[in-house]
Length: 173
Image (cartoon, rainbow, N blue to C red):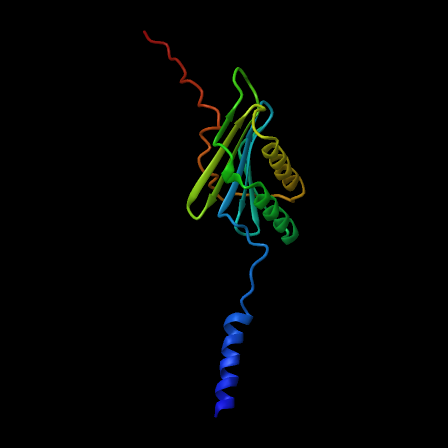
């Protein structure tokens, strides 16, 4: 009887603790969005806590949405890169004064319902941020995107989107 109880206890412990596997490739964030805007581009790429990556091109051309699947090895690489970078330590805005028509980037990271935004305009942010932004561009180039009609929420992009055009003036009599 004692042997049966011991065996049963060992099996139960094995089920609860032996099968628990830490997911190495899981991101530590809910979503990570990088938006870029300049004279020749306006787009956003969104990494989610799954293997799907979304991309929206707003300029040039009409707005289009795309998706791709990220491989596990790329996911692990990106996760390690984010852990080394620690976006929490950066200010929320880096703006170069007296700059017109410069390139802008917006990083939005959401973790457990809390969002951290980093807006960059010009070339005054720490070099680590530019390196990170370039690496996300490399991730994007290595993915095979397909068009989708799905509506994708890229978060608050007001800081990076151009303002709407002024209303047309109508002739009054």
